[in-house]
Amino acid sequence: MSAQRFRGTLITLQNKTKRDPESYATEFKGQLDHIYAILRTMDDTLGTTTSISPGGATATGAPHGGSGAPPMSIGSAASILNSAADDNAHFLAVLTYVCQVSDCYPMQCAALGKDLVSLLRKGRESMRQDVRAAIVKCLLLLRGKDLVRADETLPLFFELLQLRDKTLRQTLLTHIVSDVKRLNASTKKGSNKQSQ
Image (cartoon, rainbow, N blue to C red; front, side):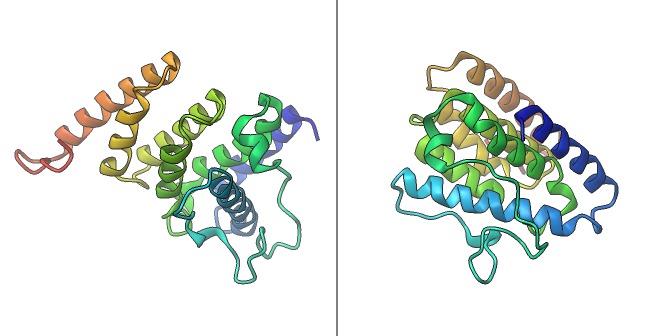
């Protein structure tokens, strides 16, 4: 399936999922399980000591849910970390879909933000720029939906500001400023010391 057609299919699924989350829970679970399988593989590829949360794994360890249909193919972890953009298109499209509809399934996506933070922290320098930027954008989506806390993302974003990626730095700086403003506006005086 071509990348453009695949992306169109996911956008249609995203719209339907947002309208009726209960009916599309199985499809979402299959995609989330597949993302977790790829994230675990990427974590192993990076040679890290901590592992991705098993929140997406099924009881049998299968990479997809009980829908009967396998999840859409998204490539290998090694190709996602450092290959051409075409190889990454499926993985990034599925990850974006999962993050876009994560507010419909907050319990299933509770650990996704922490796992993405962990992956970015460990592989920030070895990842391709487009993959790193897409994962950051997904974290921004999760942060906007309050599925990941500011005290988990802000330290990572400050670390990422040191990378030689001008577009990423601009995105992060804009987000950091707006996030701190939002935190200050929503808290009473003196109660946001943890975020500062």
